[in-house]
Image (tube, rainbow, N blue to C red; front, side, top):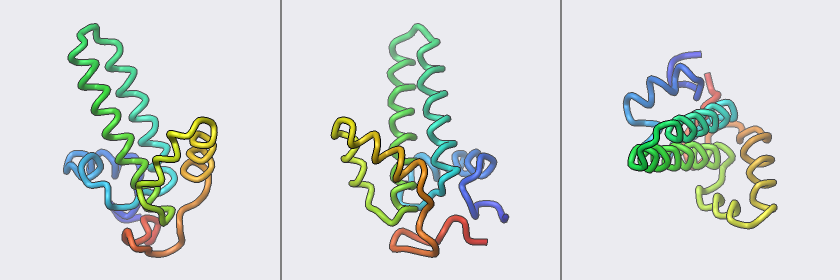
Length: 122
């Protein structure tokens, strides 16, 4: 698969250095990229907790929140939905079930949609 065609771990590092993952949330990301982003967010959040300084913890938490939202919006776009669908996560129980099934398990739309080309396209 050519570089940048998917959202795999090696592509994520290269993309992150170009501020594409963290800043641009209008592109689409596939299912594997969603789970990589979730683990990176988890790691940043917990690494920030290891440092006793509250400023570093606050910056790490904000960075984790921003990366998480960027990954979730990309995944919504891959499913053909607006990022505003993330507001469902505010509804107790329903939000977490929606998050797990729709963003974490189901495949994205086949082919291009209004948010861009299919990230799995070769």
